[in-house]
Image (tube, rainbow, N blue to C red; front, side, top):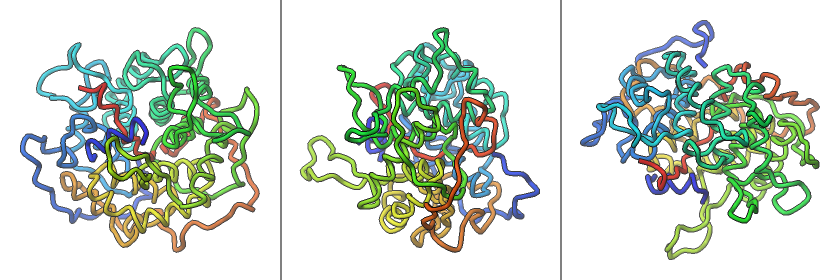
Length: 417
């Protein structure tokens, strides 16, 4: 289980053009009764200390790609979490202003920026968040979980997605030493040819060793593609290949990560997580969250056909996990479904959109059916010719497709409020 995924276990833890959207109707989902002490606009009923902003943001991303408009009270809650500096903490008591004890969170800020961009509202809040993220870029070109902490692949991927979605030219994010966000991502990449070739590490260990991490790889693929977490549905292209060399383009690095993820999912159709410390059962358990992350990354990099087996596995097995996990887990499955053209309103017999809507204030409006559902499951189109031609350094961040999806739900709780 990755650092970020552990926190989820502990917690158990673009704007769409009006002309293109179907007619909205009143949302049928009632508002749940909030747990005592929780803000009325917050999604979920569990302790939000470590993931309040994260789960709210993922909920909005998943709702918007399914043409659901969140309630104004829910959006106001998210905007109210922002500090004057532009940063978001994982969660805070907004009745008092931020101070030097408020722990800023790059992941929460990046997710909130992406969500507000999808909503198309509160642009000043977006710009303020972007300004803060740019101000805390590390000297190696990347970002750590908190300002000043060492860069890691997950945080760097989330921040890249936010900045790209907000229209920031990523080539302009160059440090005094000429480092870019891609420079940081490349430093986490394992070379092709060896064990786990093409994968990314979360960050080097104390000895500088890189260990393959599927969640970090999924985040790095999206980052190298210049995409956020709400990836759109697109056709599959050629099979991913692992490119050798020390001066790879962002696209080549993304394809290397996709190569690793495709191989990791080829057998069982899911990724595993190691047992929790002290657990009686030492056997690896299916990691539904990381599997959904991998699905989104593969689809975003042009390989949704390689994610088909994982989607089928999630449809069959992940329903209970999503329901118990709360809004972030449900949103993650919605994002995976959307990225592969799968019906999120009939995902293994579960209406994920309705389930998500019911975990927060009743939406202002919703539309049905799923806008990206297809009549068939993703099929193997690996023989089709074509190329991605995507390189965020030359402006992919200005293109449509906010891209997210992955629930980087593992939160580093030991660094939080």
